[in-house]
Length: 343
Image 1 (tube, one colour):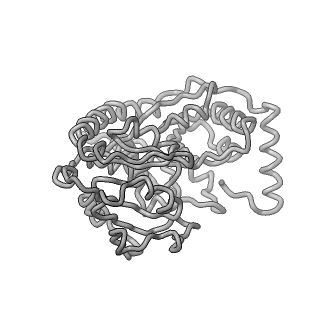
Image 2 (cartoon, rainbow, N blue to C red; image 1 turned 60 degrees about the vertical axis):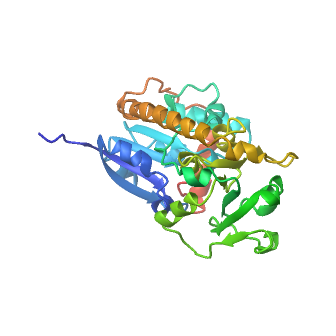
Image 3 (tube, rainbow, N blue to C red; image 1 turned 30 degrees about the vertical axis):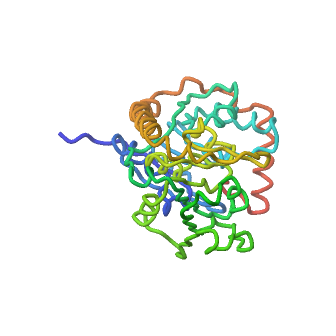
């Protein structure tokens, strides 16, 4: 007899419909639930009466404000927050925010140590995870004694941030894919001379997954395109290929890059160079780590559904907690000026 699945509302940021960043969690949840997707963006409302038809609600990346969440009565809610989506004005508002999450009994998947640090001592049902994908390693390119570098230029990191860490004589080719994030631009003045610096520019507005992965097969170094990441799907993809990572010193890059054999971490004060031996001599090491990391993920991901299904142990009955009034006033003012949107 076919098992009847419970219904779950999966609320995801609109851009992930195209990047498919949250699909790995959809796949896990679909084993237990029949999923209905809700794609939302700032200044857009998803009717609460529609969401109240679901017993289980899952948020990926960002989540609705407290005043909206508290209208979702008697729901089992889980949230996978991304570090790059958490912006707090100061520690007071950060503490207030997590008290609200705890008060509502929202369970949290923590995909970085920064999320754990942000929550601090607040008691929340949570699970710490590191996401990895199954290794599909490309031995031929990683055994190259020359550097083939893949740089996906998203307008947040430019050549001047990382190029000087390499010895130009050791570079065979740089593949440059300029596709900036929404609201960002590629600054052509920052680009080195293409021919002189062996840069192959991919002049396409969009790459299919197949085309994107083909670029990985040509490279043994990947430059992380942003200064901070929620997870960093492109980084996870590079790890699965045994590729050496170059990333800014913030989450999740500085969590994935644990030593010089895996990658190179930098910031504005870094003045050392990348040692090519760390790249070309440690393919097998990265291979083994990629497999161990993936095996751990396959074990840990089995804890997600039981946590979602469980009754929350830490719901605080503080609906009239005085400091929550601050957010209530802000929400009321937004409503007066007709900017009462879910973000």
